[in-house]
Image (cartoon, rainbow, N blue to C red; front, top):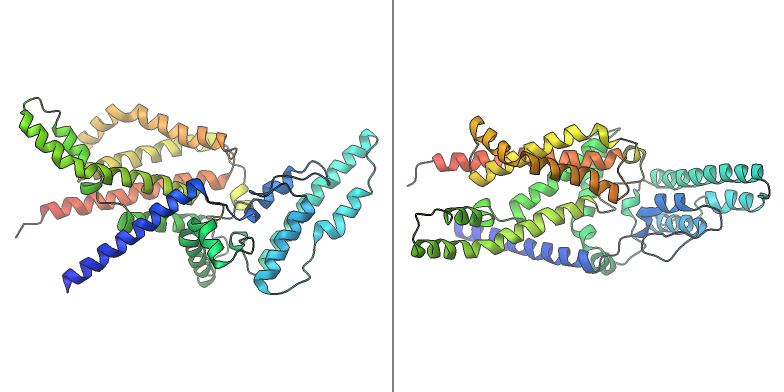
Amino acid sequence: MRREINWLFKLTKNTLRIICVFTFLHWIFFTTYANCTSYYESINKAKNHKEEVEYGKDKKQSIAKIEEKILEEIEEKIKTSGLKREWADKWLPELEGMPKSSEEEKKNYDKKLKESKEETIKNIQKQLRENDLDITELDDQRTLWGKIWYDPLKFFFVSPLNRVNKFLSKSLNLQEPFVLEIVFKLLIVKLFFVFFISYSEEKGGGFLKELEKMQDPSLSMEEKEKIQQEASPLIWRGIFNFLLTVPLTLFLVFHPCFVDRSTSQYLAASSWLKWVVPMILVSFASSISNEFLRQGRILRVKEIKEYLAKNWLIVIIISLLSNIALPYWLSIINTYGYQLIFFCSGLIDFMINIIKAGIVQESKKEPKD
């Protein structure tokens, strides 16, 4: 019975690994996200009521067409028609009739344009809320196969997470579930990779320990060759762990549907200066816990100090690059949602690694039969 269960478990893990490899490669070369998730940025880019702006991976669209497409998708989802078109019915005719010859008239036009874009965005959010939908649920009216092929990351990972989170939010009657949503989704994603996708530290990263042994000058050539042979099968598992558990997790977190990036909670201004110290601290915690995992035990205080003495500069540089340079490059440096995702991700990594290292350490203490 135990052998059958182990066989089924291994089959399940290997199947999930294949799906993850397919998803990873597909994400790099083919994935086309639903355009609707970028409506907020697209609408705000328009400098006048006639300008067509980039809308997802579509060709340039006017605000009227963006609003129309999203509301059509909502109507398709809930099988209804006649939702209010704020831009097309009210603001577009008004803006077209406004003169812009003098400086004062241009200022009045710009003021009205800004107000009209805000009201249009509010109308879209209102229609989604009243019909119990999130922007992340819309998919450009794709068929089932279209959903799988054009965005398998969303179909296999993100959408199930969103559905479970929505169910929990309703069941628990949460009024402001944003922070809990971030923590819940990150925790599930990371636990999923720990238990079902990544190889154990012994199999996935054990080759590093074997290579460290080779640095011993007292070893003979025969002993070094033996260590090299033992390390070789572990190398591809370590590469697999890096390629999937790090980049794919990162891609999941930055997927346009992972959280609604048009909400006020996500878009709230938050200077990176406020996050520098917390981010560096959580980076140190995550790095130390990774060393626990590599050693297969909880290190003593003295060992932690020795580790930090050797690696503190590298940890700080990596932290600054990931939490300042990367968001600056992505033009999202001042969003609270982005900073919160990074901070919670490092904190969850620390907790999971501590637990894993503790389990490994306890298992080594058990007497062998």
